[in-house]
Image 1 (cartoon, rainbow, N blue to C red):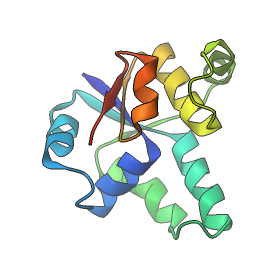
Image 2: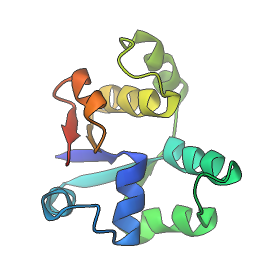
Image 3: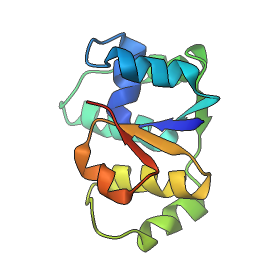
Image 4: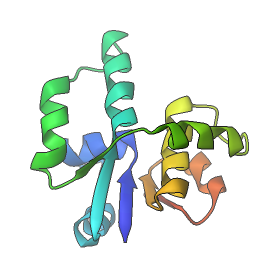
Length: 126
């Protein structure tokens, strides 16, 4: 199985946070490949600039590879794919992640239950 980590799941994973439950850790460890979107790093950068969270962006970018994850760039096809999504979730970063999952194909791992409405491509961890 090929996974794409939602932003908060990526942050929890690299921080070793207890917010990432054992079932979710096992899912990530057993995956054939685990991706982190460039959109997630961009989202973190924006939230850090706004003071909504503290993050060392260079360290996070390096943590993708150090964790054995694969960086997933945002392509024009991914961006265009957001226009074809139903208006289930309004957050543009989450919409890009869903579009990336459809295009690649990948399974999105998230703690956001709203994203489950996009169907089988989403695994909600809680």
